[in-house]
Length: 211
Image (tube, rainbow, N blue to C red; front, side):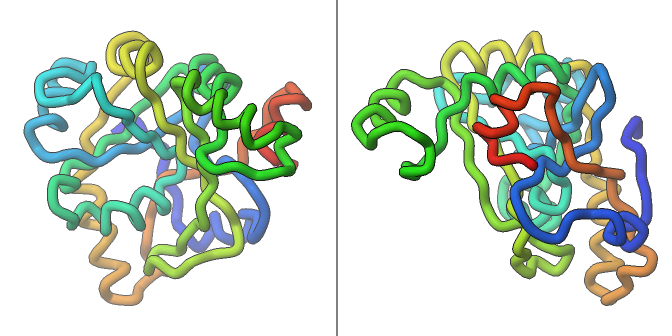
């Protein structure tokens, strides 16, 4: 695997405990996001290094940069049709472009727009932005919020073919690490190394509620 790994408890000491944070593995060129699929779609993606085959370009696809939030959503790869877990190394500049074009999934009057304006934006936008409670390895809800991004229309076409640097199958790694969770042995749990992501654009950071 190309992922950088680190013990969960070592990372926990430095992670923010509350607020809105894009927790991710990234550098100047790329950022890692996660998805889970049934075997047919996952195998095609790893073999061809793009999404095709049974992957639908007509429905929204959601990407998650936070590993543990992905594990909460897919039950550590145990949920039906989510057993093939992928680490997708995305171009960092296109990840930023997704967020610049994103519209919040639900209305909030703090967004500075009317509900009618937001509804018009939702209809026109091809990128959705959603903040949800983050979770610990056992699935317990945390005060910190985790981000997920939904892509459709031109953005899903770009994501599937042009925006990806590498697709890795991490299903076996996920299964191995889940054994430590089952045994309540977080001292030995290893996960991808992550840290909060901030942009050099205060307007974008404010839009995302990042601090």
